Image (cartoon, rainbow, N blue to C red; front, side, top):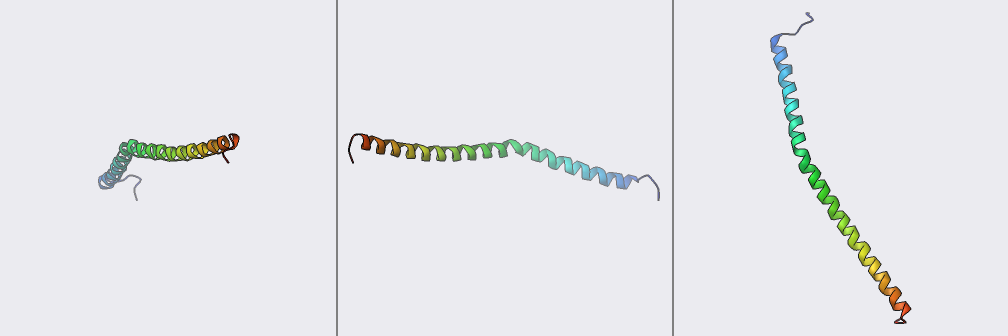
Length: 72
């Protein structure tokens, strides 16, 4: 057994490393799209939450105004 590797083995390792770098580059290139999708989802969720809070607050204000003016 030699401490050195043969050219054939080296080429195989080099190909694996190149494949891993290609895979990593692909993931890095897709990252902005994934981040954009997550940001859009979060904005959508915040809008839904904000609408619910607005409607709830509006109902409370209407009820308090009705009570203050003796409507019910």
